[in-house]
Image (cartoon, rainbow, N blue to C red; front, side):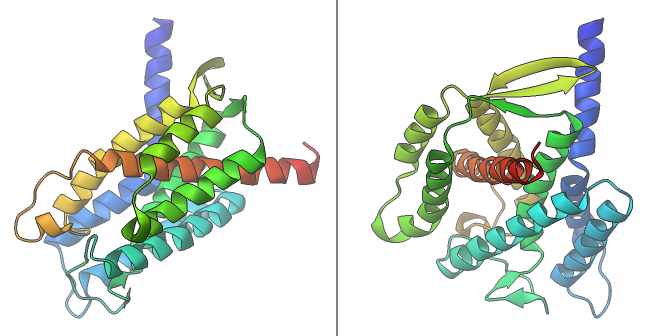
Length: 256
């Protein structure tokens, strides 16, 4: 019975952590069937995302510190989107006043929603990391993974080498989370994979709702290639490393 209660509480906490991503999915679904005359779909999505972000802070679902982290991810994601669209990896075929370089500004919120989930989970389940590697290793690995998303168009894709290094660097790292006063743990690399898988599922929903299109989806929607899980896996790595390092820096500044 205790296990069932813990499982239900875990599911409830996960749902609370996913408020912002759910708002985005709901917006994508709503704007697919509802339109406002004189307002492009991408612009409407951006407006709703901005209002949702303000609401998250006003109603104390997110703290100001979490908002700062989310803004960092918004910029990181937008930079990646601008490059990937330019290289033809995917496209946003719809019109919009808020498109820059073929990329609607709302797209940054999709990356920010990942950061929102991580920040919320960290606070609501009191996440603790043990066996965290030295900063020089985690930061350099984070930078190498991010730049590989750009450089693989020119000098080859080294994601599997980076994944191997990731396993080595984080082999002793565990993430501890608390549910109903009881603490559980799992290997951090497993949490990377699980989150990456669920983002891939969300990506299929997003492309079906017309958030963006891969080249093979422009004429008819089809399932996103399962290999994309590796990309989301590595993106989650970047996200968690950035959040963890920022929290460690803040803890050092406050003496906690």
